[in-house]
Structures are given as structure tokens and as C-alpha cells.
Image (cartoon, rainbow, N blue to C red; front, side, top):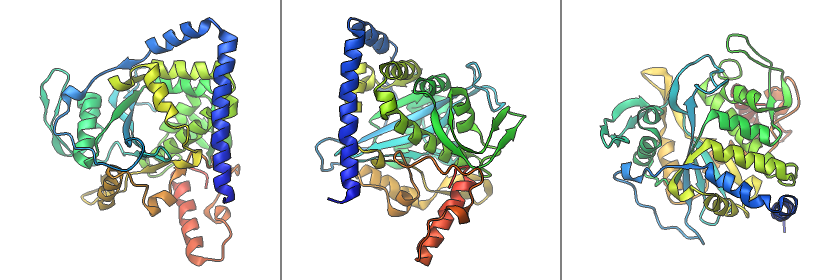
Length: 390
């Protein structure tokens, strides 16, 4: 067996053992408090059935596998009303600041998240609001107007009509919950390629690898003026890297062997999310989490939907023709295409170099293959343009 496969299998066994040990330790330490803790967590989950507001839904394609593939739409709410949330100087909000489609394969061996630019111009279909009234669609509208006008239901309707992919579940997460989840695991490690000095928005970072606590992390994932000249695209890539690093931290021994951290993380998560009714309880969420027990960190990846500049206005984006091919792969439960896979961010990969001033020429791996060297140079330059260490 190749060394990398043996290492992945060993890692998975280690994670399973750590989870079991954590459960035993939690039971022993808290004894009668387990039931109380369970009730507190279960009572904190908000759920909402939006299926009555969805129409003309695509059919799910039959695929081979022990289970059905899952498509979960994750939306970060753009609400700045909570204390400290208006870190970028923008008030109000109400849209979806972050939208990610998480695809989980039928064999549960692979999971990948596809980020969707909030400002990309799309054709938004008609959707039904909570009052039962129709919300008219529109041509060339920014993607996150769907959430602003009709919340999760309208966003799901838009995704399904644009992609032909059936959404099985949805999750919305608010900013306060994000902060609390980061703090619960003791912070998350990132690598920042250059200093950030933005007194207008009160965001300051030194270059290099570092662990960010909650409020710092919120500043980091929302910063879009210094670290990346391409604004929202770079911001999305940093969000992907942060989520990948956070997943790594959550399943690490430093978290799973600490019942206090596990409880704090679950408490923060359950207080901060709204889900569909099929995920509306602790047993439902535990069942979903256990389905990932054979998924290695290297099998969890994050990419961005293929996009290009909108010709009449280069400051706007549209999905490219390659996006349609990607959605077909998702519907058929196929892996990422080679080019997207090569540029993906993995939950197993390190967050970046510790250099305070990484450059494309310094970070490309030595190789005798000119084509490979050129690809590595291009990837390193792209990482830096997105505000990531190469």
C-alpha cells in the first residue's frame, strides 16, 4: 500500500479513536450533567421548513454508492447589527455575505465546497416569500440579492434553477456564532502574506503565520481592501482557507480530547445556525457528522465556481461556461475536474509558509519540468493575489 494511503487510513483510525475516547471522557467527567448538556444544546437549534416555498425542483440523479450524495447550501448572513459585526464600516446588510455549496459523495469518501461570489451577476428566478407572495426574478442581478429579498428559500430556489442540482439541506450561520466557534476551539491558524494597516476599518495584522481569535478572525475573513486587489474573489479564497484550517483544528486531538472545547464549540454552533427540519436536532446533526468518519482531511477541498469578467462592466463577474460543466459533475456525483482540483484548498494542507514576505519565485517547488514549474509559479502568484501565503 502506498505511504500516503497508509497515512490517510492511519489518520482516520486515529480520529475515530479520539472521538470515542472523548465521548467516554465526557461521560465520566460530567456524569449526570450529560443529559442536561444534551438538552441545552438540542434546545438551541433553530430550524425552518422552506420546502413549501420551493417550486420546479430538479430531480436527483441516481448514482452508485452505499448512500445518496448530499448537497448542502451554507449561507453566512450579512447582518452587521450584532456587536462588533460592522467591522468593515458597512451598516445594515441583510444579504448573504458568504454562500458555499458543500457536496458530499455517495460513498462519503470525498467532500468539496464550492464558493459562490456574492456580487456575480445571474438570472434570478421568481421565488416565493414567507408571506406566500411571489418575489419577481430578474436578469443580471447580483447573486446575494436572492437572500436579501427572500432569505434561504429564495437562495435555494436560485441555486437549483441555475445549476440543476437539488439542494438536500441548508444551513445559515450568523457572525456572532462564527466568532464564538473560533474562540471555542482556541483560535484558528492562518498565514498572512503582508502587513495589513487599515485605520479606516480598524483592521491591523502583521505578516506571517499566526493564530487568530474570534474578532480577529472575523476581521480576517471579511477584509477586502488590502490583502487582495481582486476584492471579493480573494476574500472568498481566504474564507476557504480559514474554513479548511478550522476543520483541521476541530478534528485535531487538541480539540477532540478537550470535552470543554467540544461542548463550547457545539454550544456556539447550535446557537448560531438555522437549518432545515431534517437537521433540526442534535441526533440529526450527529448522524450527519458520523457519515464523515471515513472522510480524510485530504478529501475535504474548497474551490470557487469558475467565473469571468462581465464584458460590459469588468468590475462585475458572471459564471463562465466551465461552471455549467462543474454543476453537471456535482449532479452526477463526480469529483472535481483536474484544473479545479489542482488549485483547491484542502483541510489537510498547512495554512501556508511562515515567511513574512513570500514571493512566487521563493515558494515554487524545485522541478525540472518547465511546464510544471510554470504552473507552480502561476499558482503561487494567484495565491498572493488572493491574500494567501504561497
